[in-house]
Length: 77
Length: 194
Image 1: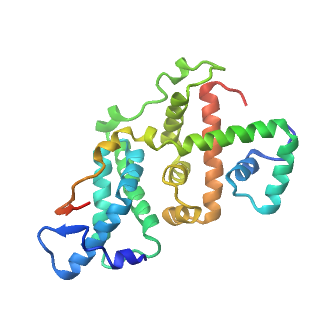
Image 2: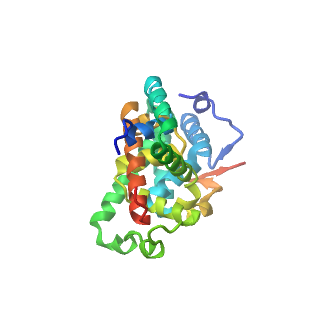
Image 3: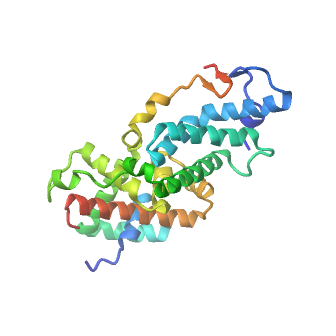
């Protein structure tokens, strides 16, 4: 647990949000650290799960899709 | 402001009955915007409220606010819509917290998750997604809002910053802390030691 790269830095790197210099340093470290590589893989999996959450979070909303009018206006599609 | 708001497609809507010219333009543009963003805003509200009828009400209020605004909202329209809708959702959630009549309908916890998923159990993807959804429902809104806007609504960092009225640096910070919060909670629930 004496990694020079923190989990926050790892998240930034995985999200592509780190600055260029830091990202290069994190990438180099991850290359040689099994623990961080595993953590990064787990983070990517979590991001993927979050990105496909829409239908899980709101299964009941579909019934409301395609309303025919808004207030007193009728929508023509 | 986008051109589409100033020049609404006259073929997409027929007012019943025909309002005064200026009002008609405002309403038509709001309707055009509704067709573009209505479904997304409704999904966003439903994720907050867990109540499709209440979500639909917030959507109506949000677009009514746009249609009746004396001046167009400053800045980009999309973040403005998310901002108005989220503020309204948070109002409703706060009201629910103090209203005992809603207590029965509130989520009460992680249900049977702890008992069905013992330590080391590999969760089915569906179950994992359900857990992630529940953790997001319960996490502090400063994290929840950013994660929903980023991953479900697919807003850019700049759009999220505008919607939440915070800096882009703050968006990055909340994204990282929110994702880590989710990761820790999920690990705790599923019994996977880090």
